[in-house]
Length: 111
Length: 114
Image (tube, rainbow over all chains, first blue to last red; front, side, top):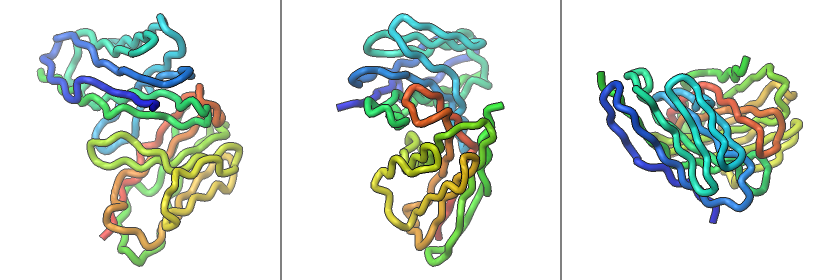
């Protein structure tokens, strides 16, 4: 069964305390893995897309990496404004545009 | 510009009302999506339009009726909804219906059914 599992469910960090969010996936023939950020009451905001194992992408304090079984979102020296829910999703093998989402990790960064 | 615009931002309706949600994008995307999101859950796919044709209906009840008048517009017509249909409704678009394309989301419509 195709599925995406994110851990931890919730993460509390002090400002400046670096950490990583995990996204494990089981899907036949990965066509793309996507990271989104979602603030309360708003739509998901696209962060990164990764297509093949070994690929890495960076944006400000965020860095996403991909292996054959999981992806990590590394947050370096986070700030309070990084507080949000981070969603991981993979494309369904049917290649119809359907995304399979994980349950998300809610990050809280305290000043 | 990766903007997807949804209106209205908030909607309150009774169970006998008929209302519509609207979504617009001007990125030249040919695939558009409707999602439903309940609190503390990920978005759930409802419908996909690819090149203005309905390509996916995730067994959504008929009280939700999608419409794609042209490649830039997507509507969701609502009729006889139930209180459990209260949720954040998200619209997204992508270059086309191919799986590798990035989906860009709108800010959503917060729907409350009384």
